[in-house]
Length: 77
Image (cartoon, rainbow, N blue to C red; front, side, top):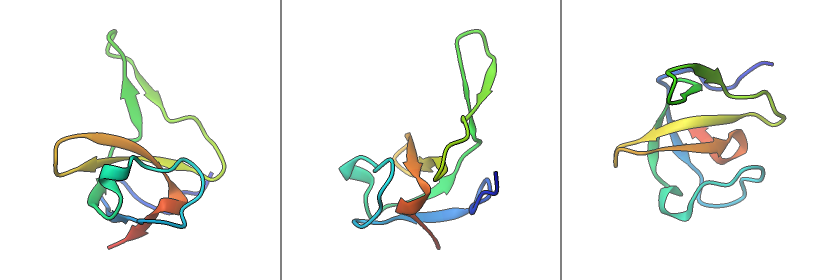
């Protein structure tokens, strides 16, 4: 699967007209950074984000939290 955004790339979350996997309202319009695309469980195993169409990304926000956001909701900064 080809991804539009790279790890550590700066992005802005759109405020509307996104589509698949919308972000929480409190991050709409916010700047973020594409995070590592895996999750760790309590056993410290890293699991990759499952492929889906359109893709979703983990995005780190300055407020110190990470959200899973659909690609259609993101734009490069």
